[in-house]
Image (tube, rainbow, N blue to C red):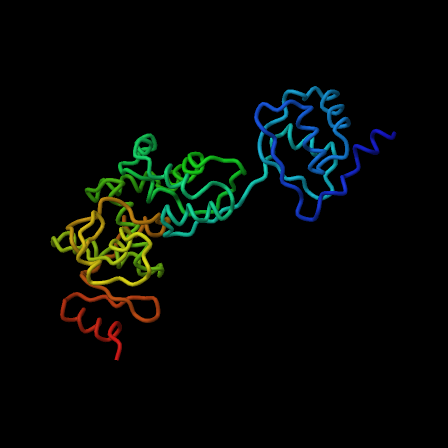
Length: 312
């Protein structure tokens, strides 16, 4: 009776937020039990080892990061390690985040270091394995909410996010890409620009129409976000010098699409890039309310710029 009573009693050290602990690869049950007792996760290392021996699980406890919840007993902790139910961190990646912003968020949540994630996400030797034509994973780290276990590697995070991208990029979209005479990389690149140009869902197909119309006429896209992407530590002030600086992304200086995506677009932006509105607009300018004024001629566009952009 005394043994079962002790097994059913949670240790006093587990607070309201629980206790995070790690089981290292290759650790034997004695070492695991000793560290769990030292961390205040279990009452007695001897009881934990006795449970593992009785259940025949001494060599099947799984390595990883775990959280002992308030009220967890020795039996609960044992079952946690047998099942391998690791502590998970929920991560929400907004539409339009760049790989660098994703890296910062992952580091803030103590999942991986930003530098390590950036190295993995810009490893050109790996992209081809995932069917990506570009030299980085920018554009294919699908914006969504994920649950990642602590101790996960940057490469596994990238694999999960790219996997989600290919889940969302439906077969019908691949067929539509071919109908447009484009490849997936070009569609993702265009979608990333659309994503950065507007947060207004109804405007995305119109923005797409403007870019398609300009491409057909041999006009430069002249998109500010493409310029900004190539500026390290952009301070929010886009200058004339920036617009004139030639980079593989500056669509004021190069014709056609930039060399690759400038952010990670969501499904709505991807859909807009595949199904643009039927409109003959060639220009747009931001209004003060977050939407845009669209124009067919340069004269009308200049008038709109004067109305919405120039300060008195």
